[in-house]
Image 1: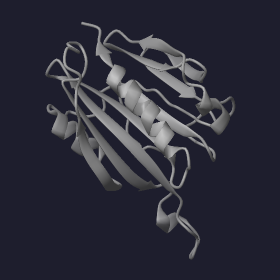
Image 2: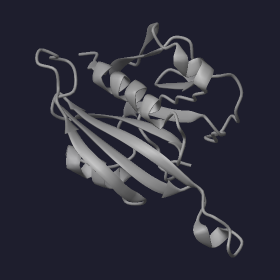
Image 3: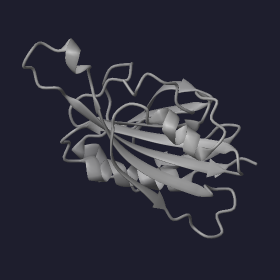
Length: 188
């Protein structure tokens, strides 16, 4: 579970090696606030007007559960906190877990309706509280790659990628998530 918070309008990616090999065709998804592109050969589930959930292959549980060689991405407009600045949004979503890295991503000049500020955080989070596991059991971890975007001064959009620690496809998932994050545009 992604820290039990309501994240923005959501996009989830689930990936297997076969499905990841072909991400050349992209589609557009939009809400009344923003639009984004996503890999066209991935499967939609939980269809709602302000949220897009995707898996790169069929199958998987209907809740936020990923199996081996799957990843999950959430993209949406910030609604879960009372944050007024991008820094407050980032702090809200990173109260738990261990931050492994953070970086600012250059915004393309001329992308007037895109992100004016894009930040990436990589966070390690236990998939289950260690105290809930039998004594001596190894704790499984999620790796969350989080992109935070500010548009038009006060619109905050986030994209969260989740995969299991040690997944050999993590770098590819992160490339797809970054391309999606860079494609976010405001509807206004």
